[in-house]
Amino acid sequence: MNAVPRLVLLCDDASAKIAPVSADCQIDECGVPAVGRCRNCSRAFCVTHQGRVLGGPVYVDRCEPCTTQDVQRRRDHDEQFGPSFVHSGRARTVLATAGVPTVEIHTVEQHLKVTRLTLRVKKQWTTSAPFGHGWLLGDLLWQYNAGGPGGGSDNIEHCLTALLRDPVPDKNGVIESGLVRVAEDADRGGYILLKSSYASFSYGSDSGWSGVAAKVRQLAG
Image (tube, rainbow, N blue to C red; front, side):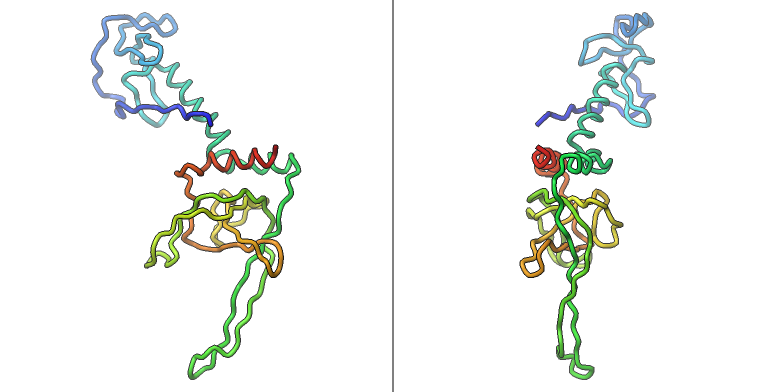
């Protein structure tokens, strides 16, 4: 797996004072007095050519060209292995183009009928409804609270995960990426959507977004 280039923030204030360097700016033959030296390329840089991210940090040890290259590397990595690969729809395009088959996903609801006075269960039954189709990615790490926001314990475990072909709103417990937890339905066939309003894909884990990208490419061949 490709390593993610890291940006080290040394200063987040554009007005911070930086120790002067006894050299002139070497970026694009600028020639004005330098305020720092780049840790990447060792070239001296002035305030104009100091590394900074638009709307973000300013770096005391990075020149503007090296900072721009690092930002672009991170963006490229995100598009290939990060959340953008899924959110942008590229993962779905890769799977669809390769002809990877989808599976049917449905919801299952349990219904109870109780007596009015004793509240004893008089009848119980289940119904199912189509939910959509998706590609099975295999086991990925999820975090969820079985007791909801007011109680219960956090569970972190690997769950069978599918990427929905056509994402649906979050009202059904589906995160914006279209990744859902599913379980094989031995009775009806297809797969059951495991709904939980408090479940979230553990993207910070080793099997996070890079794991999704790896599984998509593995399926696509």
